[in-house]
Length: 115
Image 1 (cartoon, rainbow, N blue to C red):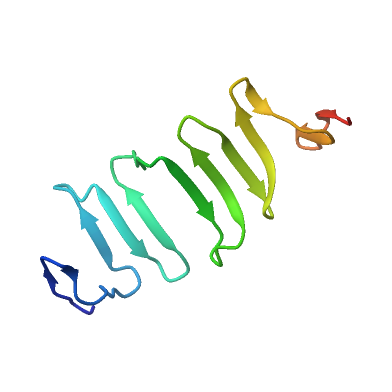
Image 2 (cartoon, helix red, strand yellow):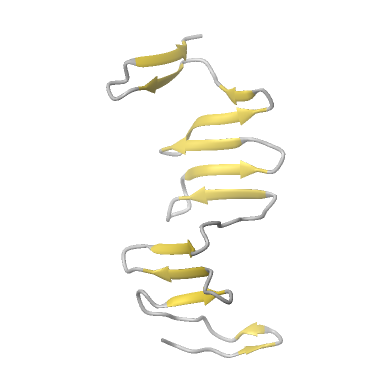
């Protein structure tokens, strides 16, 4: 583990931790952030993790494909292969032409609109 100095201007250098070494927050270590070697993890030991922001977006590692977007007082958008597949609006779910939704193990129930 590489240690760093913190002063009134912030960190002097990054904090480097080895795999599975954790940064823990809270009296009972309620929040942990760490890398397991094959991916990172944010773990809320009390079962609740809250993210507060006016907008929150999840992107792939290369930051060139959106996965999900959440906007305060606005839409929730879900993406597949950087293509928006689901979006909420004030009335519920926004659907465009040629959109189909499938349910069941064999996609035996589907609802769609072909324009």
